[in-house]
Length: 169
Image (cartoon, rainbow, N blue to C red; front, top):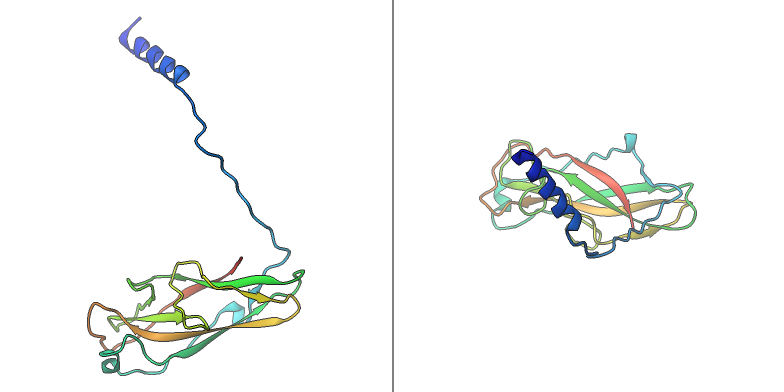
């Protein structure tokens, strides 16, 4: 036998006699819901027109005055109540705000829930609301221009896009 054959035999023997221990069990729990909620509007899309803002007004503030973001969900066809929230995903800045792809710099869009808590981009929401299956429900949010900590806000276009996903608890 050549050296490669001996190496293969010893490798196989080591694998066959290696001790095996069960470290832990994996348990997976889930639930399939009868119907999902959908965002109402033009193809489910929501467009917000933010007011013009003087860049200097963000110099001493971390965020501007808010603009409303009301997301209406239709949950018809489901049996009973559902606990839902909206999760936002897209390009985020260091503060967890929606990053701007326009020409303005050191500014992002902060999204907050009805309680004034920041909804960080690409993170699961902490608060859910219970909605009835037989009616539409509006989730109230606000959007703010938010200054990024790394410098002064500069003037320019402030364009951003996020995906909104209805998530269930």
